[in-house]
Amino acid sequence: MRLGAVACLAFAPLAQAGIEANGGFESGDFTGWTQFGGIDYDFVDTSYPHGGSYAAAFGAVDSSGISQVLSTTAGQQYSISFWLANLDAAPNSFSWSWDGVVQSPNLTDSDATDYTNITALLTATGTATELSFSFQNPTSFWLLDDVQVTYIGDNTGGNVGAVPEPGSWLMLATGLGVLGLIRRRRGTGAP
Image (cartoon, rainbow, N blue to C red; front, top):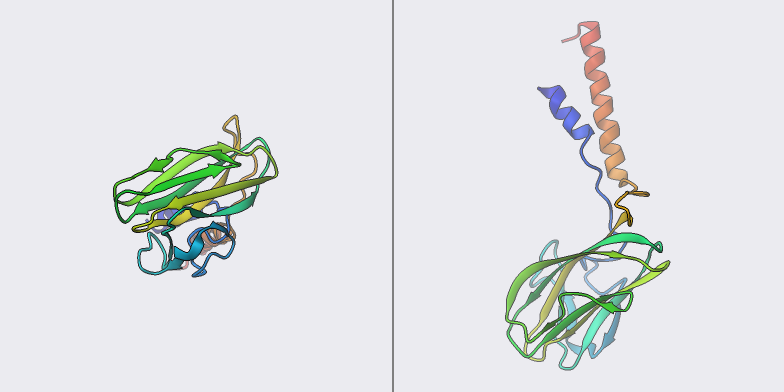
């Protein structure tokens, strides 16, 4: 039984780290992001996080947002995932873009919503791709948290360059070491 549990740990799927900076806003500010527009009512705090301790809030009267230029490979696919909430009903708007192209959803006069996960699979066209989020909400706030952009692979569905996180390598090495120790103990008759 112990051997099976160790083997499961040793061969657990390798997680991939996101290529974005500060996607969960855990720095407590907009580090890694470039703010634009009327940012007077945009902030990061602990009031309404989806995950972790922080989330970003956007309450621009006209329009504001954040963007980040990501290091990408032309022709390769990336998974984009983020959590979005709206604290109050219309008037408001939200949009997001990948490399200057507005993606879905693109919302206008949205009702109040709890956090909703938005995901997309998109292809990079160059070595630098801009991810941008735009908000307008004069009477309340949009919330954004847990932004993650993960390299997937080539357009044929192959995963041509996934690199496991260092923690995954450590877990694999530890699992294999424990398996070796168990095997050695059984071979010597040790209890």
